[in-house]
Image (cartoon, rainbow, N blue to C red; front, side, top):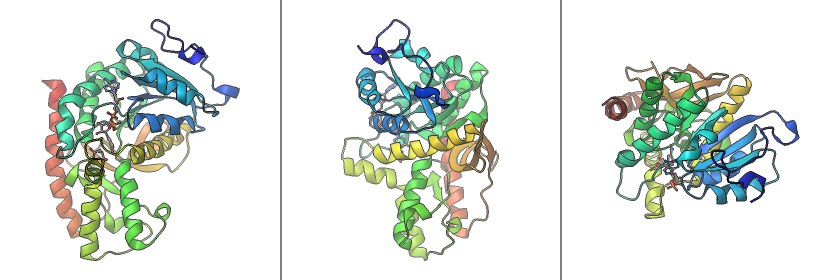
Length: 338
Ligand code: NAD
Ligand code: LMR
């Protein structure tokens, strides 16, 4: 094997040293589930991110292949692969940011909650590893059902005595990416000019786009509001059905995950005014977790923004979202507490 793929007992697949090539400053990022449908394009895009100096790719299958492939890209980040549970500790040690797309995806006819049975245990194990090996890392949790896996992660970290609510973020960026795209289509604008806040959670009616707060300021007919809300809430299902059994969104998710991870890294670097939506510990509603805009800084989600003014349609949507979210959050908490 070449140096970054040497299989050494308890040391991951590499012996390359820790500095980025050329000594460039940067952050150490681990992807857990890096060989998956999201993990592979996510790894490729993170290898292209100039803020990343070290990229650790962990999976229970095929990590050496993906690592070999990605490591040939002539960008700055040093890439190392880690295969299987015995190498989790080495994959995580020293990481600034851990991105988790590990777990099974939906097939047609399933809800995200149907994934709980398998993914809850996967997230628990990976978060136990984080608590042990990089308790100060920022965690970006992608594995579904996000509305439950984030509370699971929080309980694991509480148990380990490492919980910092600012550092645990459920990734809802794909909802924002979709909302920007679909709203731009309706308005006839470039999606890059559009900003749609999406709050609540990441499943069905818990995905609540605030179309009254779209930038640039605009207005929608009732018919447009209903079409857009429905399309944004069911964007994931649209992809699951189109893939017809071959999984759920992977490429748009990798794009969204990198957009969000890059924002987290800019926050860590100390950039001012980095604001994105995420599912975090929150006092915005009576629920312990809720997605809203957050300001990302050196210690993670440093400020959680209020919802702002809602119209009647959004107020009704908020009540529906909270009802479903309450059960999903409790299910996650109980999984660890019981
Ligand atoms: P996938 O099956 O293609 O890939 C998942 C990867 O996780 C596989 O490579 C698998 O080997 C790995 N894995 C399984 N158990 C593991 C463990 N214990 N440790 C490390 N890796 C492990 O699935 P995918 O399409 O990449 O989706 C992954 C998850 O992301 C799913 O739960 C899916 O529902 C979710 N997802 C979330 C969003 C979001 O917006 N938050 C969007 C799309 C998908
Ligand atoms: C999505 O929104 O695309 C993901 O949550 C995957 C899914 O199951 O829909």
